[in-house]
Length: 611
Ligand code: M6R
Image (cartoon, rainbow, N blue to C red; front, side, top):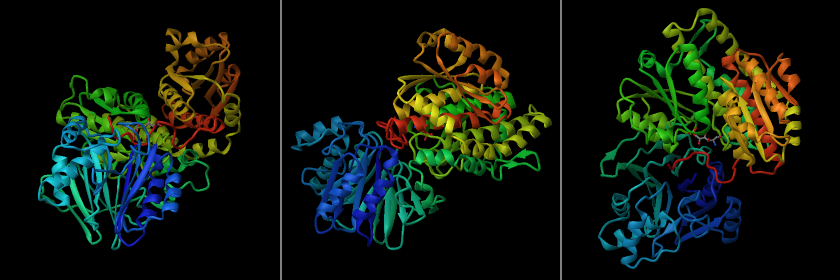
């Protein structure tokens, strides 16, 4: 989704901004632009990739030490140069970049049109630029006050950065619903929608909260509320480093992130899986475990891949801790009758920690008195900050739009939570605890082992590169994995794919099966495998092409499948951590064969900050 980067200091602003915009590409976008202030204000915009903007900048040779830039993911108005940010008002004095949606832009636009304003594009953002200018020109107030008053009229969400041609010593920023931070350098300051564009310059950041604004100059920054109360903000130290957000020799971030999973799962368990003591320690849940296990029910809310991790969590919590769990799409939860209250606990799962729907579900649950626990990857993200307690996944920055290492880290956290709750609840026996602790410890090396040989997956990917549809089937713990495998394939290769609980196949999808239909069967869970074998036979009888993912030694499955990929044997409840990996690779190789844009698939954004 849209990204913002701004700079004020001694460097050439265009260099910092263009590099920053390239670092923000992973969020997904369709056009880009920047405004640089020197003696004058210069604005460059393009439809397409940041590389085009770099070329344009070389031709125009923009100079100046203050500027703001943006990558746009279209919401209002098609992707085009005109609709790209920055936007300016009628006289071109103010330039504005904006993430979020101005919901009442139509009313504001009509009002401004009556006052003589002419608009060039279709975006909600352009309206805000005109509004700031109108307020500024019609009253005796300064740049900051004009932005502040304009925001007072706006309904919706925003993260904005604004510059003013005649006040070329400051950037004004404000946030409501769309993340923004200030990076503190030496005699230079940065603003950005996430830390990736500024990490090579500074690790010191200040996060803006909703309804906060700031003036950022060469000499410092001042933060206040929209109502003008001055604030003293905590300075945070970023944990990520530059290497983590570069490809490190891999052709795509997605492949790098798939191959990192041995390490990221190990990082996620470090200091938490206490092997010698046969216990789990989750510092982020200290003091709240009893409340969680005694809750009337646990509601897990998330979106996309994180929702799939939540489904695995449901199986784990029920099996190991005998806790009643419901898993909700965050986007649906908030519009349902709100029956969650202080007797319940909500767990929100989000890689980015910024997903608008998940954040809204969190706030709804809190409003109703429920305690909310977060499982987030991005440290300091809004969801991480707004939850009552939580556990970080420590997977490191995930840049590929398709979530891979974040998923396995989320499942690792949920597994450890279920074990912790199971011990506290006395539903998890000493023997099983011991078995799971020992097996969890070996997961990172098992992942590494699987990633050492990917030839068969590449071969299957080659054979099915041009399939039009895929079906993914699984039972029990493998059902969410089937959903996740199908999502991975469709988002990066644009092949239609569906995941189903295997038994549901005969209630409809079986009608689709013929000799052109590849069916990926995740048959990794022992206790359901007999039934899975029946489902495989049903597919075979209709000449479907079976690709199986099974545990080592499941010769019955291997015999029936046309292609089979083996994963190391582990306890049933740990299989999702391994069985998802060949599916990630399968989608990756198919997408590469189809020459798709793996890391930034069309129409998708890494962090979905609009509802
Ligand atoms: O950052 P979040 O985990 O909250 O994101 C949720 C979904 O948008 C995300 O998982 C999405 O489905 C991914 N592109 C899947 O690969």
